[in-house]
Image (cartoon, rainbow, N blue to C red):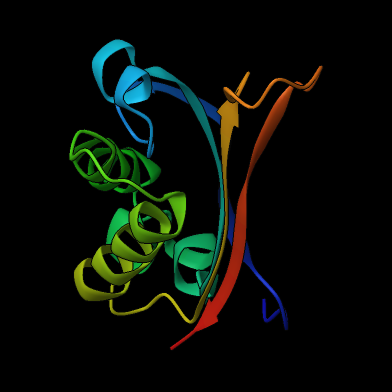
Length: 122
């Protein structure tokens, strides 16, 4: 089987972290949500049921978790680090869509979340 577009995704992955510009954000932390989509050809895994022909989403989660533990001022920085690591650790990944949201950002607004989205290709 050959498909033009194949994706592995992780949706609505929640982390508690200390990212932000404000002193309170660094001290108290917040809940962050990651939505991720990886484009790669996993047709070999379809044919032979072998993990070596795809990317383990459990391993992808470990990378995201490790990067989320590193405090940053900006979500742009966190997102860029996650994408860089994923491209380094998983050479078969062709493109990455990443959305990183901060719940209840401290900006005096009635808002569920705010964040960044990135689409990067190898």
